[in-house]
Image (cartoon, rainbow, N blue to C red; front, side, top):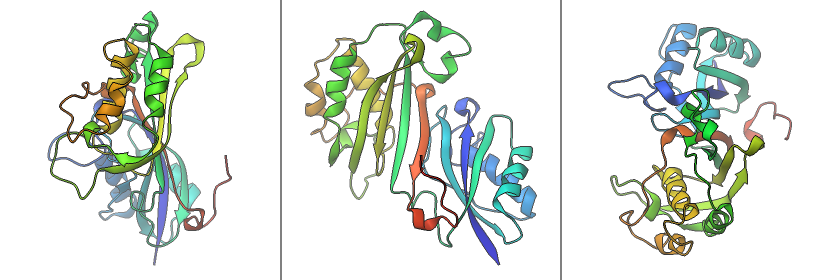
Amino acid sequence: MSRTFLALLHFDGGHFVGWQRQAEGRSVQSEVERVLERLCERRVVAHGAGRTDAGVHAVGLGVSFTLPARWRADPLRRALNSLLAKDCWVEAVHEMAPGFHARKSALARRYRYDIGTDPAAFSPFRRPYEWALDRPLDAAAMRRAAAGVLGERDFRGFAAKSAPKPHYRCSVRVADWRERPECRGLSFQIEADRFLHHMVRFLVGTMVDIGLGRRPVEDMQTLLTSTDNAETSPPAPPQGLYFERAEYPAGLFTNPPDAD
């Protein structure tokens, strides 16, 4: 017999090639699977709620896997944290219903992007974890641009060029710029049912250009009707991006966590 689990993973993406295992380079998936194999003495496949890129961080990435029935959530969390590398940490482990999949079962995902507009953003304790811009931004203009992102629409104008997809539609229910504490700059919050490759970084890069006065707010609507990213601003750097959480149906939890 076996049990399916969901681990909520934090990681510093600075030394990873991203979530997905690669032919070369250190991936988060390979790090998690290395530990699971050690615990079970056989290969275990881990599935992530999102396929983060190189340099992108997480403070709650859902990771699912199936282990022998002898394992329970709390001892498993302790075992994982004792063996994972120091740039990874498991916040919680939940037992899930059979068939649960961290990516396929997700109803929504939330990302955050942090920008430092003050000189201290270049501190070695901040620069690896945000976009060290050190320039003032027109937050009001950026919020107007973000409001246009809400709803269900085609986002191919904000997607990396790749093999054709069945569709490029995403339903965005949160898109908002917020002030960071201690006047450290701005943070972009976005939540949607799905995201395209580089979508958040393209959105942020374009809105920062709007906030710097390099392009008008109206450009956002034009780009949202585009069939490619030729006119979109360059993507924001990866170190400011965080996978925050995924939302799952409560019925898939064996013991549903307390509501926020």
